Length: 166
Ligand SMILES: [Zn+2]
Image 1: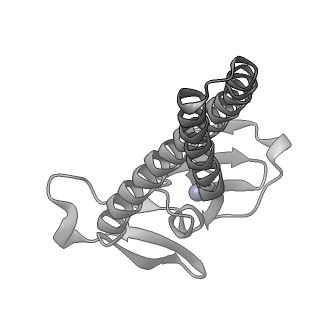
Image 2: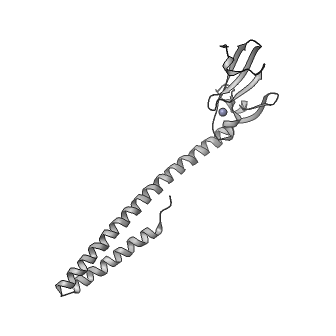
Image 3: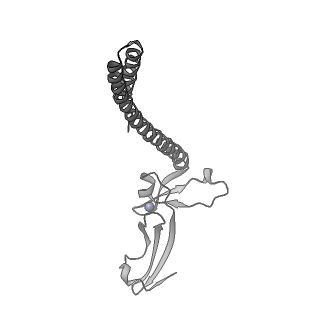
């Protein structure tokens, strides 16, 4: 939420009014007039206090928004660095994944990332799974983040009919 500059302007206006009222009170010799100005001054100071509280809460919200944006920028920079280490790869006909480039692997084993998560800016690791069923065996890669399933080998199967996993 942006800070409403008119609130700051209003606070400054109230403080300027307060200064004028204090001057008037100091210059006044008449008790009734002093009392009237003092009552007016109290009203102006109460307004200034409420305007200051409003500015304070707007500033707190703005500071929190800046903190969140900085965190998001740091995440995006980190992701830009990470995503550059992977290349699009067709693991089976029509089955695309992002695979760690050998030149960037270092001590990490070569692994694959889910394309859906990659496009969303997240590292979704794909892990292999084999399902044995009546029609034979199905080999899949499953994303640990979004649970996308990529069919690598075998026939599609009905999830409710998964009798055994290895
Ligand atoms: Zn995913």
